[in-house]
Image 1: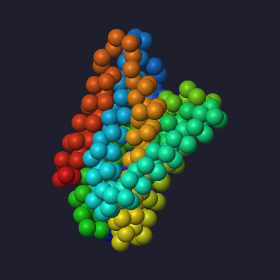
Image 2 (image 1 turned 120 degrees about the vertical axis):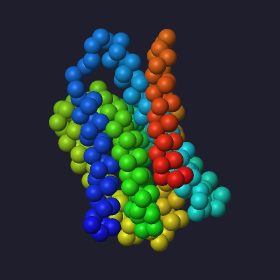
Image 3 (image 1 turned 180 degrees about the horizontal axis):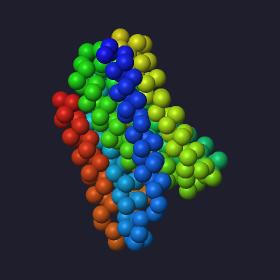
Length: 238
């Protein structure tokens, strides 16, 4: 199998984890109610931990590798500021889509990086695809719950939309492979921009949803999510 076909399959595999997470979220509510409540907040925390690990272990380290301090500051700060304005716009339109925004902001830059990475390390590309897929399952779960509770879309419509979003992975991967593999500084800038935006979303929207009074299990989800990122990072060879 040639490199292009491998990139398409790997990024599609990583993207399909989003509708998989949405499907798991569509399963009937768990009883008793306290377990359903803890599970929901725990998965939100797990997704937040996975996003934080993507920032700390993939997006920022790879982003700063090819850039000087001024572009690093500019790209990272721009991500946070622009995502703030996006959040304000969504709030003004009464559309709380922070989980979905964070999921795509994580998935697309990492898929771009996967395509660019594949030109010099197939092994790193394969392991990165696995890490992206593991992150996308809880992110798809949380995004489904968020959209379901704030819109009138049906289960099939949401899962179908997530399935179409999975196609963004191959598009980004192929773009990274053909257009950005010779411009690592551009990939780095995109990753830092996404990192700044995701960090804003974590502290503005995701982390506040995690806490439940007198419940201590959900925060462990954040620890588990970050640990997942550490494991993936070590497997990649970081």
